[in-house]
Image (cartoon, rainbow, N blue to C red):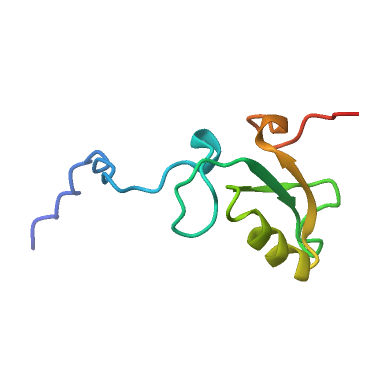
Length: 98
């Protein structure tokens, strides 16, 4: 009879690569692919087929990518609003301005 094979030892996660993608919300970095510019806008959207009407997802946009991210969502019927990053709160919702 063969000996049981021991389970592999637990290892910690490898350290993050120096070029790791930043946390878009925590670091306020543009959500456009490959862009690392500071975000100036929160592009709020939802997919009505899978999200409740009140649900808002947030893509962050720098000045250069605001229009392209807005247009991408608009043609799909997903765009709900665009607000400055100052109006966003940490949990991804927006502050009621009025």
